[in-house]
Image (cartoon, rainbow over all chains, first blue to last red; front, side, top):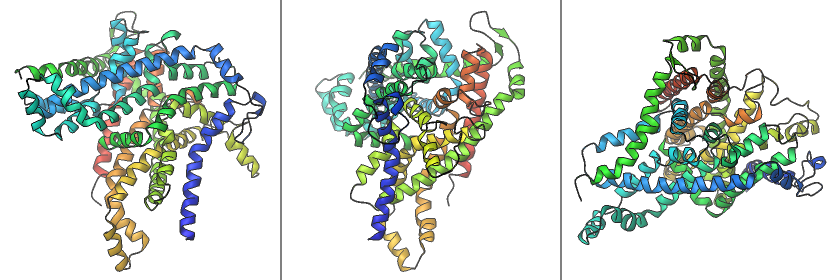
Length: 270
Length: 283
């Protein structure tokens, strides 16, 4: 019994150390500048002022829409292309199939440090700097997504495909109408991983986007907090960070188990 | 099904890989032999970029910073994740809730976590220094002391990522059949022996995963020093990616920046291969 008590005590302390800073952050964003240093969890001198100030200084609403647009469109493209390639690799026999598989492994092993600068130059040459293309196209196909789709399709019975072919269904109909509905957990995993990765990505936007109306949310918040425009106002900076966190935290509250399972899947893959 | 159907299905992917992976790798090698500010024409400079790199104090500083980061980050990550996974493994009630709490920082943007920790670690009003003051200890310049700053970032990165590794270890621990421990109990094995000879061999692949993923994240550090320290104080938190970024977008040295990227990538691959050789062996 004392052992159980100790166990729960330790677990609670650990959980607190992960959650308390976030609660403090929300509370600080709602505090007046003078009440900020406090350790307690309730806002000191409650005010919405910090949030109002953020919106007068940076176009955060616009950045939110940019981020949402980029993340949703890119995730859609990753799902469509991943299903097509994954299906071909899993269920069709063709010359060069294993070569493509090795290409995928190579792509996933390659450190991004090597492609960063050349890819920026490609964006410059294509005239895509400061456009949504630069944010979407380089991420529109993902090797991890192909690999996960391939694995899921391999687990389905051949009779499903044969029956559809007998009915005269084309390959695209087989993939998207017959097979994909049978592997929705995989679709959800890829959706979560891709969406989250894109929503949180800050480095690439910092490189290819320079004009404010096209900036994504993490980029804008980063530049705001290092650029001096927050004028050393802590509360304002923190309010911007809270707003960046809210969409993904809300999704996490709804799909918590799926988030954990998806991340664990991608961790195991490496 | 027509004969060319499979090729039609994979063609968008192949095109994408050629444009965004294969071409950049080749182009990166070409760039390392050139000097280029992206506006005027490229100039062939032979091995000058490599010569410069070997003599570049900041290149070695970035590697040294990454090593210092990893020396704290990896052991801390393994110890904490393993301890929490052990605790969770023996818990029925509330386990899901604890897991969800540990995982929260994993899903949140590094930008948020960095801004948050910047306040926690602030010298004058930070929570950590307030706690130190409360128990009558001197305050620490977590982000301004050259001897401390990188380790502060390493602890922050551990706090952000450890939840993921708790889950990975938990998966490993739960794959150990209960009978093994019962048999060991009958033989009178100590807790340490049970851990060393039953648990450790089974979770060893997970330890390898943690080491590799942490190494990669160490070499990929960017947003943390960019927001918190801008690489300072005295370049002690300058990371590999941050140095690539600086050379490319502050000085427009595209050739040299590509050389840095190329060499850092080689180093990462080399380190991971070595780790595979020595960490991932049967024990």
